[in-house]
Length: 225
Image (cartoon, rainbow, N blue to C red):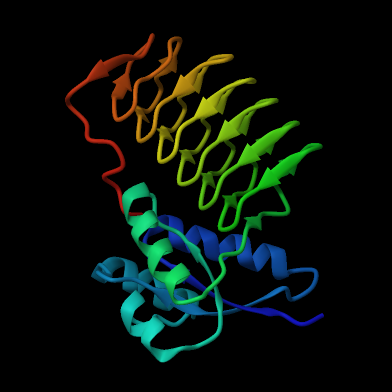
């Protein structure tokens, strides 16, 4: 089987977790040839941690695209706004994203994955679920039946999204947070860690607490890992 050349954008924590997903998918048969990692502003500590993995840093997104190398891509960056910008650049250059699912994740019937989606180890997706373009389902997150995660949304580690929910584009459910049955998150909404969403959340609003209430203390999507 011919392997697909691949680059990962983002050398922070989640970007390096994506390496683990690729390695796990390649364990039984080599599906991807990981060429290396891209990052427009690599932090020194992340560069050091990447070097230990033996995966090369290839430069910035613009530097890579200028080379004209044919390769697929996946974006390992939490910030939805940054993901949108990067996706626009790669799409304009004619590159195609790939969806990645760790073999230790569980997906039921009628689970549709958009291009660039990443589903990490221990994630549980039941039935009739739509995962949008460049959406991230982190380790041990659960997504219930008949739920839609629109493009660039994220379910952080150990979050629990119940059935019949709808996460708007760019929205985020924080670690250990819960979204109850049938709730809707507007575009770019942010659910803080450990919160319990009992009511719909308006676009761009950050909610925290139990039950979740709006707060002005946290800006959604500020992490770039």
